[in-house]
Length: 314
Image 1 (cartoon, rainbow, N blue to C red):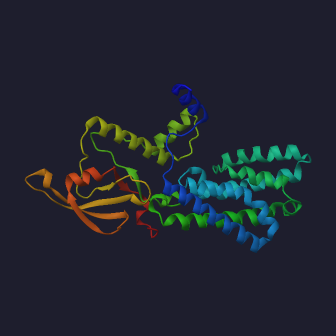
Image 2: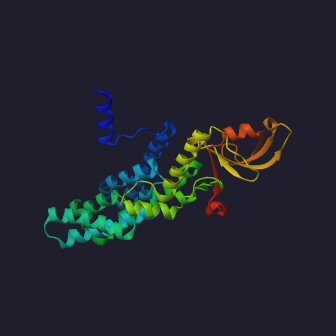
Image 3: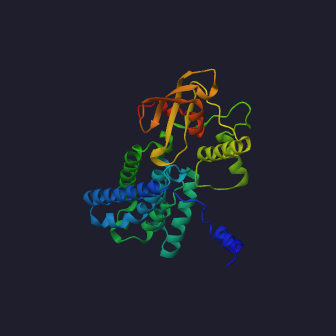
């Protein structure tokens, strides 16, 4: 089969050009296992086996999102909690007030999508939660609007807590995304204009596109792409400056953030020394030193702290 045809088929099917690193795949799988075991066990203990069995499918889908793409806007706490609760209420209303099951099922999912749009809490598994309220067992339907609280709200809280505590041990994938401390690239004065989050949102609205990452992360992708292009064009090491914060942009456990805290210039720039402190990643809070050129080769991007750096959740 000609290579061009293979490329066209791949493009049509939406097969990505790159896969997640192995460590991310393992963490996502492990997080999914732990979250569903806890959701099922605690729901079974609190509400009985029937409720646990019915609600597990939609929260299995939530687990995929929370642990595979923890920084997606579809997985943030408001999206998960609001999406499931709004959808549950819509589903129960359709089950009670629409006498035809097929129509009730369709309305439950469609109206749940509309309600999630209005409430700004799009969460795809919410559709399954709404549908369950219509086609679920008699035990679920007998709950009425209490279904939104038990088991839906309880399951939401469990899976959100698991997502927070599981991902907190890995600085590069902390959940929710607001707990990421260093995520905004800094542009130099002679660089192309800074692209703000508001401008990214405006561009997305203008193009009427839905992308499974938030404007902040999309902005980072654009910034990094620009940096990569500029490096390729200039074929030069980045300038590193005293007091500035840098990241190596490596995946998984290799991810690290350092700040230059001191420097020792010399007559030969090749032998300039910089002293740095590790702010995030392996050997956090340790100090080290190397030549300026070695540090520049380590640098992937320059960062500035997010507002959450001052939080006690560091």
